[in-house]
Each structure stands twice: as C-alpha cells, then as structure tokens.
Image (tube, rainbow, N blue to C red; front, side, top):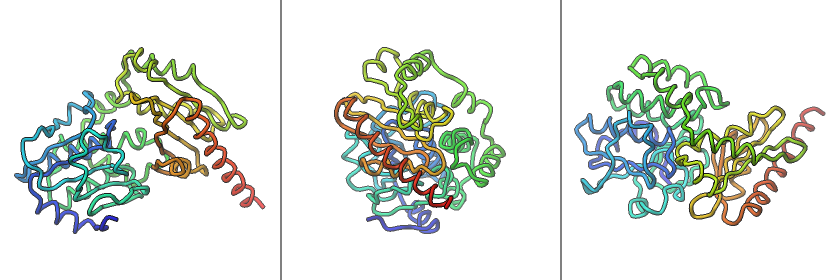
Length: 328
C-alpha cells in the first residue's frame, strides 16, 4: 500500500524530483489531462524536465493546454500519476512505466494504493483542486495557461458546477483561476456548448437504445462498437454522454454501457442522493465516487447488462430499506 503524504511532504518530493514523467489514465478526461498539464508546466517553470504520457491520444480539444508529450526525450527519474484510481486504468501500452510509480495525486476514495506514495483528498471535487494546492504550496505562479488547465479539470468533474460534488471551495477556486487568467467563456464553450456531428449522431443512437428497469427507477442505454464506429465520434467525446439517462425525471440510477475496441463494455454509473454509485461499481471490480462511478465488464451485451442490473437492483433495495428505517 502507498505511504500517505500530506501537502508539505508531497511538495518536498516534487521539488527534489528530476526528469518527471506524468501519467494520465486511458480515455483521458478533463481532470486527468488538466492535472497532468498543470503539473508539467509548473515543473518546467521551475527549470525541470517534465512531460506527459497517456496510453490514448490526448483529445485535440485540449490543445490549449500546450502539453509536451513524452516521446523518450529523457530517462524518467520520477513518475507521477494524476487522477488514476487503479493500476488497470493506465492501459497496456504504457505498462513499462507503470510498474514503479513514485507518487499518485488523486481524489478518488477508491484509490487502490498502487503508488509508492500518495496524496489523496476524497473531499476534493477534482484532482485539479488538489493540484492547485500543490502548485501554490510550491510557490509556482498560476499562469493563464496553468489556470486554463486547472479550470478544465475542475469544471468537467463537477459538470460545469452542477454535480453534487460541487463545493464552496470549488466555486472559490474557479474564481481564483478566473483572476489568474483562465479564459472561462472560451473554455465553457469548448467543454460544454460544442458538439460534433458525430457526437450528435451517437447521442441519438444511445437514446434509441434506452431501456427502463425497476419501475423506471433505473434508465440504461448502450452503444455498441459498430454504432460508435458508424457515428465517427472519438472516444473523448463519449465521456459526458453518461449523464443523459440520469437526467430523466424519476430515475435514480443512470447506466451507460459503451463497447470498447477489445469487445468488453465500459460501464458508467450516475445516481441520485441516497444511491451509492461507487458501491455498485466496486462489486464489479470498479470504483469512483458516491454519485459517479464506473467499471469494465467482459462478455457480450446481454451478460454485461445482466451483471450491472443485478447490482443496481441490490443497491436500490438497500437505499429503499434505509429510507424506510429513517422514516420509522
């Protein structure tokens, strides 16, 4: 298990580190990408070598982060993982760099403790929130580029400050990042108000595959590998589609199944207050947060649906029994 570090110990190790390789999780989202980019820029501004590595391409819409990808330009002397809850989330293509990870900075309570040391704050709305504290403690200037990176992770992990993990601290941090030069209007347009034709096509397909279960308390939709390929949408555009089924009135659990290239299914779980998404995911080998979690299941569509629905039913019954006890 990881050695648990506080903020002071973490910055001490980062300040001593040289040739830092920063790892993101596969299918990179705004938080893992923004955290990695912000740390990279901070270390480079301190005169250190630093670069970012991910098993999947960094989405082009994050080009404003000005990330330097790792292409073997230095021999890594210190390896940091950001926003990665388990070793399985790195992807096989970068396995040679994931066997000995020196530090993990994360906000997932389900973190498996795979790194030698870890800075973990499960109360943080996003890893970028923790990263801001790290960088300011290192006396790094929050430049407009770094502010853009941090705002990206903070806003995407809170659903543009709509999700239940949004806190007063998250709003105050957003204000600080705006003051530091984050281009909030432009970023919100890129991140939340712009969809490609492919994204619109796969969204329509997913909604056509919508099913209701357990007296309409659960809504499930799926996308097969063939449907995704036909739409032409990139993997990075599929992340926020997971919120659609939970938005339906009366739905307590929204489930999205997305078939991956290797034929397994990525399962995303979104829930309302009182229903634990992480508990559902953990019983299937995944993890995440109380209202947003996920896992990956092998097998065909019907088997994957049966497995996830069994756990949803179990959690809905637990939540219902708990509510009944509170009312008595």
